Image (cartoon, rainbow, N blue to C red; front, side):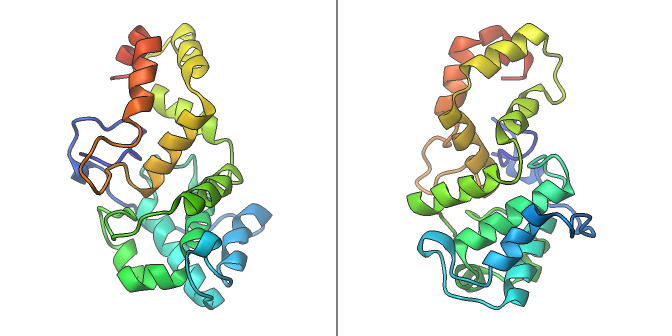
Length: 211
């Protein structure tokens, strides 16, 4: 099954359909929000994620994660994508990343996702990561735009989905989109319950969105 990041639509699609993009120059060097990850990456990973690491190490991993997720539909633009990547590196910590892969391996892996590398987030890390994602932009709008991407939804359709999508649903879908949708135990993806609730509340709108 393809990673949830591909436009937030992936049921019954092959995993290989969502590859990483090429690295790009950072247009957001003057944006304080995107500098956060490099600065915080010099300290321990949030919520016990990893040991202290040098700025170059944290920056290299943040750049690699940003490059690997570029073009996946996970963010509205390169600036937001880099902010997401830096938030992830801050939370996980460089030691945990180093134990699994080099920056070059992450950047060049077309199937990159932290769960593919063997990384999982604790509940505390998930809380910290989602807080970081929220600091990068309006994640609710990002999820809603994902439903409308490539679909012909009416205003009424989007109103229904928006009204039925809870804050916890946004969190579940956003975290699953970034760190991988498939649980290690082979159970249903984390966002399945969210989609089921939306389909029950807005069957016509969700059908029009491709579900």
